[in-house]
Amino acid sequence: MKNLGLVAYLDIKESLRAKWFYVYAFVFGGLMGLFFISGITDSVVMGFTGLSRLLLVFIQVTIIILPIFILTTTVKSIAGDRESNVLEYMLSFPISLKEYYWGKFIGRFVTVFFPVVIALFIGVAWGLYKGGNQMPWAMITLYSMLIFSICVVFLGIAFFISTLVKSHDVAIGLSFAVWIVLLAFIDVALIGLMMQNRISDDLIITIAMLNPIETFRIGAIALFDPELTVIGPVAYYLLDSLGHSLLIVYAVLYPVTLGMLFAFFGYNAFKKRDLL
Image (tube, rainbow, N blue to C red; front, side):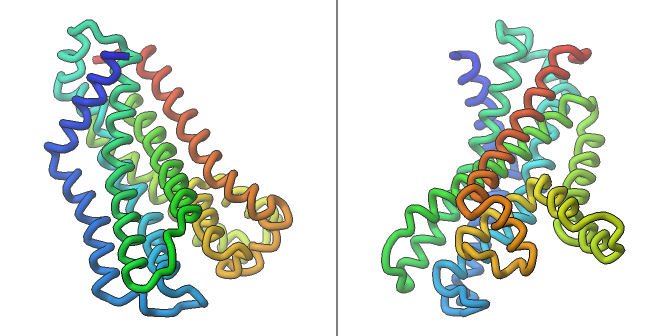
């Protein structure tokens, strides 16, 4: 456990020295600042106003930005160490493969999770300052859990990719491909399938809910709109099949389970393949 903590600590320090971390933190902090300046908390769109309006917009931005930031910065974690011979140097110390791999995973999770949560709390504090009645602890807790789940799933995918390739350039290319495919299956590809009407609508919706980005989106919307009126007729199928509470549980647990499966697959590939 001591070596695991040391590897995680070293990865956190390495991330804090990297430029991508400050760009990452600036993007989410800067977006919150932009939302404040633009007066989103004072606008009303489809019944959402004040703090709910601010957090809803933040959700939509998080869906797009967070996965690609996690993928592109994390796929270089092991592949980059292998290519720069840092991996060979690290393993010359009395550190097991398990401690190295999971230490890197924990360290990278800390650096991608906390900037987003801090930006979330800044947004909530601003919403309360602009006239909110009380701190919505239940909503903040659930949204933080959703951010936790989306971080875990894309960290797992990124580490899986990073263990399969030996060049960080190839790893970045694969991460973009994964992001584009998942992003396309939010709406574009699925709407095309529904318009062609070649497969059942139930199957299309089921496939959509296997997409962690779509799961995050639906779960986040359900926090503000329990009836899911924003997404139209699909809401009836989801609420009749799962119900509101089970839908939130699924939106949190499914991405975490999927991410950990990818992380374990990556670890098995890492310990069985040629390390160098």
